[in-house]
Amino acid sequence: MRTWVKAGTGVIGTVLLLAAGAGSALIWAGNRMLAKDHGALPEIVAGGPGDPVLGARLVKVYGCAGCHGEALAGEDFYGIPAPNLRRRARELALTDFARAVRRGLRPDGTSLTWAMPSEHFAALADNEIAAVHAHLRALPAMEDGASVTLKSRLFKAAATATGEVALNAVLVRATDVGPAVAPAPGMPGWGAYFTRAACAECHNHGLGGYPGDTPALADVIQRYDWPAFQRLTTTGKTPEDQDVRMMSGVARGRLVHMTDAERRALFDYLKSLSTP
Image (cartoon, rainbow, N blue to C red; front, top):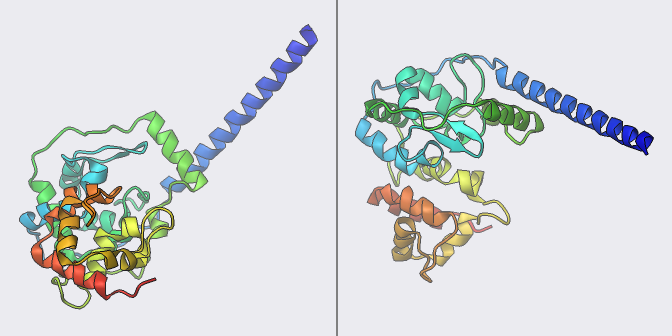
């Protein structure tokens, strides 16, 4: 009996050692990926300081609070602490802030991860980046809403190594370049510009949706006339007076802050898309 117990204990010990070794290797590999220098490429932001009033509206429409908390002081986002934007905007010069948002790169050349949706903000206009930066800098300082812990570091490293968390340096295309000034609502290019920043995170590039999760916008827009679309994007209610999973929160927290011109231009743009 003792022989079996000893044998069983030995097997368990071996399994635990192997698991610990595999886990350590995974974390080591992930940390190497996170520490890689992708090159702190120059980032140009034309036009000088931004408009903080515009920035205050854009942080709502583009959903910054979804990851960084309502106070924009940071919060835990699925195990990864989202940073305090009030503090980061003070610490980073405008060009460094723009590089982080659009390229997903820190000043030292290391990459942010997918939790920061840089691939959707890669073509954000200079005037809008500057406006967001100006607004965040104007906010009173606040303590961090989430702290980087050993647990969060280990989780991030392991998730990066397995591919569950992707590096923005891989996701962002080098050809993505934003205009100096964002196109005005209704002007050529505005629809593609706005939906990439405000809609693509949930509805995919090209707005075709994610099968089984979110619909293609060219398809779902056919259910809406202009009054129903106004209601959807301000209250989150469908024509049948039902809330839509995820969309209701996005409408009430983000899209309600769109201007009338933006809302109408978005409706017209989505109606112009070819159905899948």
